[in-house]
Length: 442
Ligand SMILES: *Cc1c(COP(=O)(O)O)cnc(C)c1O
Image (cartoon, rainbow, N blue to C red; front, top):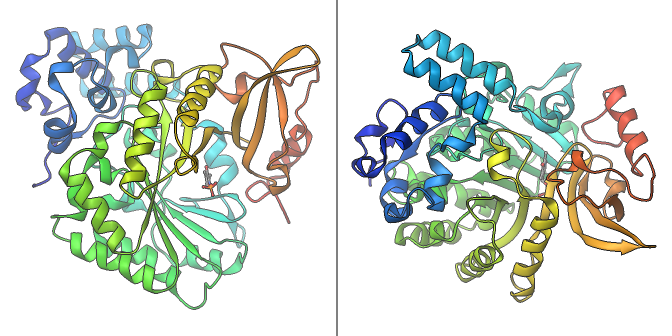
């Protein structure tokens, strides 16, 4: 299959679009002027069930929907488009709306960007001691855009919010100076949007003898679900698998951190073949996804996904809570409900699927897991736990927040028992103030 994508400029040429109402088409134009929109032919032809549109989860995952914008923002943009406003004024208004959508949650740029010889290394993040994130500048796009993507500003022409780095040797030097780094996670966007040759430029230096402490190379990707032909028939698909083989033979662990949000993404012949090819090249596929209202907010869906993943030899890894950014009002689920969904799904599978961890919130102090709701000394509370933490010592110390049935994110929570601080709050404030925030240790 040849890659072909659609965006706001040409989506009306998709044959199935004629089944939509005029209002739905208008909604795509209005919302797609603010939030990134790109969908490819594989998704249109193989993943979306057009008889089930607009409720279809693959459709909602890839096409703008009216309620992804708040009513006032929708009306503002609709009025401009209907009045035939200039591109410039549409862009100005879109930028203003985007800034109201919390484009950079959890202080990613301010607090996770490390220093090297006194200079900020823009385009890499070092929040947890063992793991360095690299955002290659050529990898800040995707084969299709997810409507729920928490990295949406990477694609929304908001240059001041873009996280991206060239391969300039500095990353390598930084890693060489930081023996605590065992994992390098190449992310985006989607790094597999890059030609293999460019990707290799980022990965091959990691295989050098100077970096023996780098044991695990991870690639965060949605290509298996959105464009499995990346591993099958793209011009450089074989080169990509050869690169995977080379990583494997170097003795390092290669993990594809693959995003699957909906069981249909695991069902096509193409994805199954792609998974097999990736595995034969020596990579392990670990799966993760956010929990999303209107897409996958039911225990049955997660049970089905985990079972399908295991039968394809993939390892369930994380269930994330949808981040407080972008169209969060459309996708977010109260934490108590997230826990119930996770718990019910977990109860219905064997230990083989229970490698998954969640529901997990990537927030300022770390990755906070909702262990559940319980009662302590008569008070109803959330029991929480950090899976990862800015200070490694905070991990696996259970802590408690007052129960709040409407809370959808960590920032909505208050400490339980009338306390005004969580156990880590003072130390976290100190770290953020001092600027020594990216590793949480000396
Ligand atoms: C999740 C995450 C990681 C990886 O954490 P693991 O638990 O090792 O998978 C690394 N850096 C950031 C900023 C993260 O959010």
